[in-house]
Amino acid sequence: MEAIAPFDRITVEPGKCGGKPCIRGMRITVRRVLELLSSYPDRGALLSEYPFLESEDLNQALRFAAAAVDDESLGIDRVA
Image 1 (cartoon, rainbow, N blue to C red):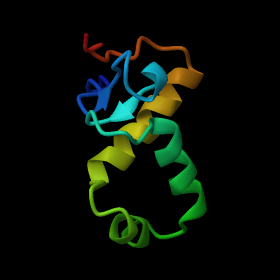
Image 2: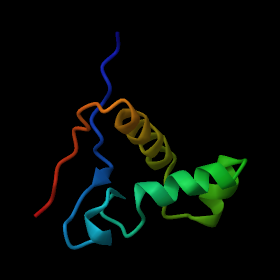
Image 3: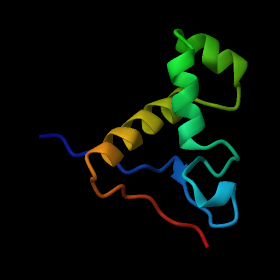
């Protein structure tokens, strides 16, 4: 069984976005990225509309959500 890579693009900072998981320290939450993924049928269109996001950001947001549903250890580093 292949090990899941750490979530190196998911950050949590107490003073940013209410301490919710964000993408690469930016003010866009994992939840918002998941909402975007559900409303854009084409990833290319999503990435064009949100050029600061990268394909791996989308992949990690999905993996993070799957891990949260399974209640796995999420392996993110909290930033002070």
